[in-house]
Length: 242
Picture 1 (cartoon, rainbow, N blue to C red):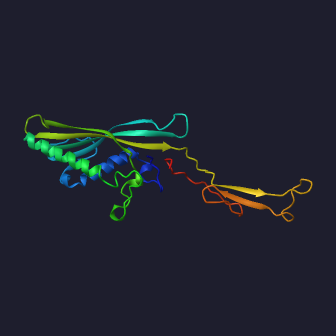
Picture 2 (picture 1 turned 135 degrees about the horizontal axis):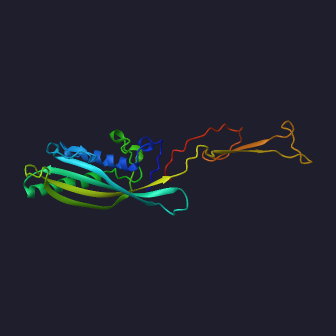
Picture 3 (picture 1 turned 120 degrees about the horizontal axis):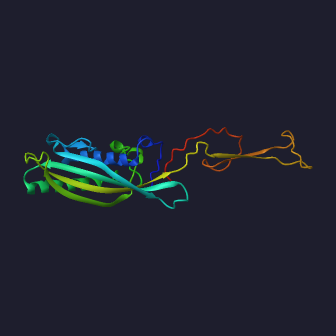
């Protein structure tokens, strides 16, 4: 599925679709009732401290890109596989209760993300009313080809004073991009003027022979008889094939 923008892009003019998707997942998880009171972060730059628990984090682990179609035919395009790492850390010295809590967190994420009718819509993520413009620039993804989870037990300070358990959930998210050439002087219209020649092949003056003028609009409908239009350059903001 493509990332065609119906309107002029906003955030995706300066940020990648991967970052937008990461932020969308983060916001969706932090709004879930289960994660009320959790500390949330989108970067591993800061170390998780005991006072940060319970904790939720989602990070861009990496991103693989392969060609979308033939290498030497058409525009340059990619199939992206975005690798996201989701982390849920809680404090509990009871291993059974810890596992139950981590499983609840995992199930909340699974049901909260993958059943969202706007976030996962492959055609139009825009909602209406309070859900209007849910995904910035209507950014979408095609699917989740693989995912994996694991439970990790440990001690933040290695002193057994702060026993914790962590859910690590890794997700691969697939989407496509197309980098079409930017042509600020798009061919939008063609003006054609037909002039009948005189008996000896000469071009008669406009006073003697009526000119037939036709404008072919490439995007605005059938040709119409009119005067030559004034065409100004138009920036092509489309980044995907429809």
